[in-house]
Image (cartoon, rainbow, N blue to C red; front, side, top):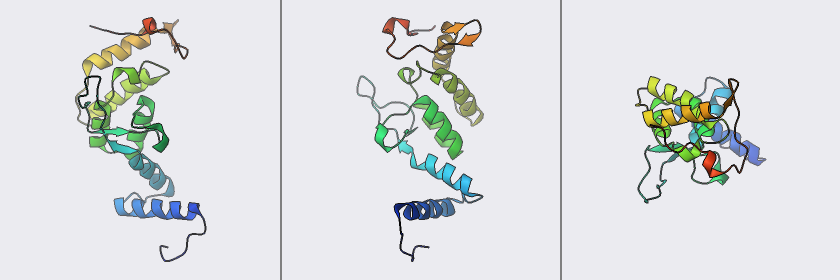
Amino acid sequence: MFASPARHLYDAQVAAHLAVANAKGWNGSAVEAILRNTSFFLLRRNLARDADHQPRDGRYIFVSGPGYGWKQWVSDGFYTALGLDDPEKTIEANRAVFWTRMDYEDNAQYYLIWAVLMRRAGGVVNEPLVRRAYAFIRQHERDGLYVPLPPGRPQSQRVEDVP
């Protein structure tokens, strides 16, 4: 395959996927190869800093894509952790989640599910953050249904501190 000229960018991409999948042993099927490779290619060392310029928790993050910057959104991190199926990366990327990445859309729900998966993988659950995510969901519930806030909502509608 590598001795043949690539006619298109697609040919080069397929060759790269095959090479990584074969090297990692992720070659049970084309779907497995593409899923796990994509998750692997979105994995980064966590270089993020907090407001005090201190390193954030968690050794890894899953970025949404090359154009999204050095950020991990909860839903993307959850799905790519599932795709990679690596307990260490699941635990460390989950540890990298912080509140302002989960107080919108359905990210609090994803965080709770991811926390369970991380715990099953041997990690330690961030109890205060789990409580805060749960409180956020309950605060935005109407008749048993979670209703996400619209984009651009006032800061006063955010759950700031949960005992």
